[in-house]
Amino acid sequence: MMKQSNKVIIDHLRCPDDLVQIGMIGELSRDPGFFNFGSDVLCYGKCSALTPSRKFSPPLPDALEHAQVDQGVVSLPFDLTEVVEAFRREEYTAALGHKARHWAQNPVLRMGYYVARPLLPVPVRKHLQRLALRGWDKQPFPHWPVDTTVEQILESLVGLILRESKDQALPFIWFWPEGKLACAVMTHDVETAEGRDFCKSLMDVDDSFGIKASFQVVPERRYKVPETYLTSITQRGFEVNVQDLNHDGRLFDKYEEFQRRTKAINAYAGAFKAVGFRSAVLYRNADWLNSLSFEYDMSIPNVAHLDPQAGGCCTVFPYFVGDILEIPVTTIQDYSLFHILRDYSLDLWKEQSSRIQERHGVMNFIIHPDYVTGDREMRVFKDLLAYLAELRAKAGLWIPLPRELSEWWKQRSRMQIVKSASGWEIVGEGKERARLAYARWVNGKLVYDLKA
Picture (cartoon, rainbow, N blue to C red):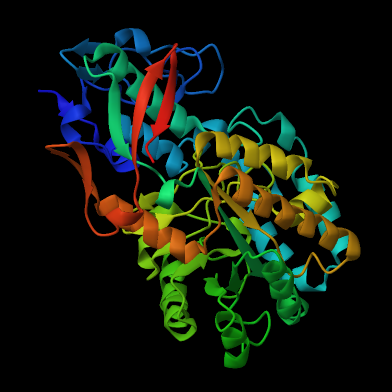
């Protein structure tokens, strides 16, 4: 019996269920590994038609030739959901040897570093971090500076369906409201008392470009968090989120300790009236996230080559981890750009933004109020805001608060497309903001046709 495996495409595109028939055939291999689906689409998981490679060492076996198409039904030698979730949840990282890449992965050394961190000036910290990250640019996967492996997998399957189907187009609900072509969110992680005290000035800068942001606040130990500080942010139309518990880098070390801290974190969610969460230094474990009582999380990078915990979710779109929506961090952090790469230009941010915009995904920026107090850093940040404001005006970029993005994506996930007398129609709460779109196969390429 063929196992149905189309849910992941339905969830991503919000297209009619009966137009995407994907199943799995054969008995899967005992162990997961890397393989291709075509010449340039990478997969990680179990496969029934071949033995996946335990190491990422091209050339990899190709599963595309074992796919079958019959009367519009695509049968795959792998479980599509398993393969996509292996990237979103970073299950492939152990096969790349990421868990032992450098000292930051050693719990004892990491604990010592974070104990000493408040006493270390930035020049010392960035020197230690550069040493820890040596060879980051030699990592073969995920692909730097933006990885869209998940999108490539899904698009290759949609293309296969369209090539073999009598229908020339697949209707779906466009990704963003009012037909916006892509999305960007600005987020500010507050790490120190100095950063906290600079937040008013940072909000003034954001407002001067008409861009609102979220502030991720550390509840304990780092600095005092008076209620007047929180209301000074929300009253101006910005957003407050919870950032970790005490920023000691140990939130995900042990499950029992995580559960203990979760109780306090969830209490702060209520006290801060926060619906979003981010872990300190982007340490994470997707399997534990649903212990947190938040609507969304922003702790998983797209490509984590410059983060202490390597890996990356390999997608530029939000996705659900249980009940929590994950909004991945898809661009380089300001600290890494300035102090690790020593780059004070917009070049990398522009390159990442361009690649994300081509896929119609979300640009998620982390700018710390602690690290843009200098004239040079502030100049670069203002240039970034000006660039995003230009994309908003000329290219249809949507720049909401993270909570507004979360509200839309969850609302969209409940919408459906149905056949009516006049054609396809979107139904569900929020449909007035939604737009109908079509995926087409044109000249050997998948293209999107957005209806006004």
